[in-house]
Image (cartoon, rainbow, N blue to C red; front, side, top):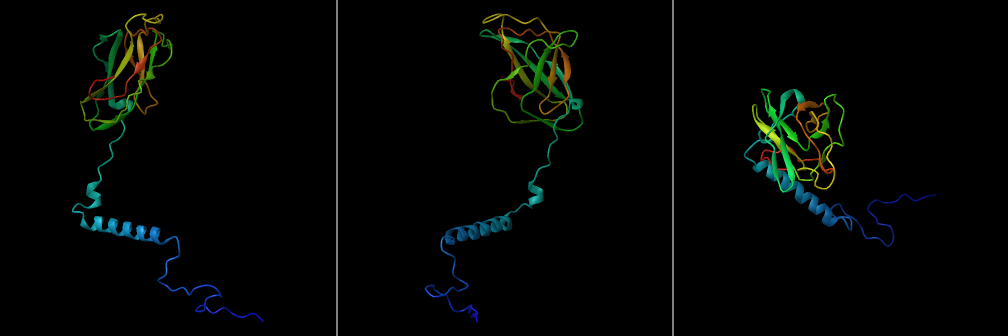
Length: 192
């Protein structure tokens, strides 16, 4: 009936294959994978510090309850008005902020005036705040009706710290002019 193939005899027109033969087209990839595995293993073996000791404890994100928000000193320059929002860590442990706060202007009845602040587009990193330390995010508008009218002056700023869904109201008489209302990212150097 049917002949049973002999595993040691190749089919007609094929070369015999042995255990050491690498399939065509996979040799360089396999060799690279083995080399990388060897280098990784060697790096782990040569390391003087255990992996557990090299990892740092993750710093938690600051919650609204960890922060006291206040306003810094206003500054005017080249037709713009800048006002830093100060984020002070009032907790007993370090926490981190990364990115832009959400900021809106509110009237005395807590109704929003105009659109929320747009992001300045500046790059940012993670800011770690030890207890008692402060970081800022600078707000910007024009210094008067330079290219358009001004909104009514607000009574409060509603501020969401980065990565927070809970806002804090900060008493601040803010007037957005010429449709320009921007916020910079949270940072420690006080820049917009």
